[in-house]
Image 1 (spheres, rainbow, N blue to C red):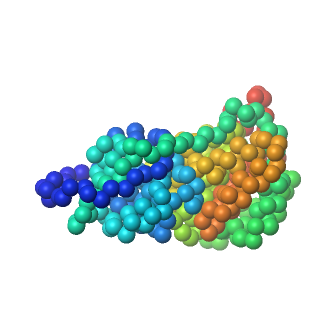
Image 2 (image 1 turned 90 degrees about the horizontal axis):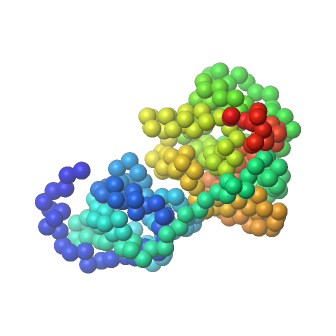
Image 3 (image 1 turned 135 degrees about the horizontal axis):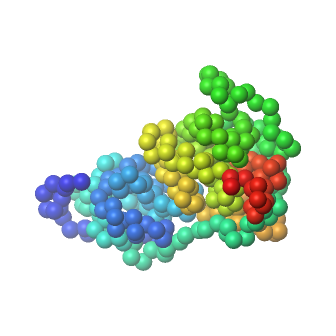
Length: 326
């Protein structure tokens, strides 16, 4: 990215904001990707694009994100009022972002921002019986009062065996791809079926993170914890996201981080709490997840619950010789 001479002749950065928190891996990204622009603006923050990578600057309403910088509300309000769509952004240092505003350029100081990183406790997982509270999760979600974004029923999640479904090879309009058949495909690595199911769900639904993507994100979280399903799931999704504009830029950012095992603190809290016997702690974590967005939280929970129930159906044991995906 080439900057005009006007950039270097701009006024000094007299307006400065301080970041309160940021993901621990963002400084490394800002060392590699120095130039970008304001990608999108929302009520609770902004996205900046640094090359092909998105960084969210905003509140923790939807959790602490794997590509997030979080500010105090007053500083965020002032920042959102000052920047414009497509304004140039430069990482002059890994802990200093400069916004090229036409009247008064702005600086976001990250030098004192607290670094955070939330990790799934994979060392605590050995078999599907280590996930204690799947039934409680379904009960909480059924009584939450907000429907799944794709109008999927929660009763089906508790089915003891996969539901009967149309052939996954039928791509005619109106045919649905039940998650049970996706799990059948990723259990044994049927690449063509996996690809068709992913294409059905990716980008399906409304909003910045369509419901189908949120469901897949929940499945990816269970995969990151358990390594239970065939690696073709990750390989196919990575290929599609890297070569096609199949969903929104924001949703793609979430999914690409998920492929590398990075999730918001809300998602990590649910899965880590599922491996603890304290049901009240787990219930609180689920409620915090459900409060995310309009339906994003319940869609993600739907993906998590379905994936855990699939492990139960297949009676997966990570260390067995016939374990899923091995």
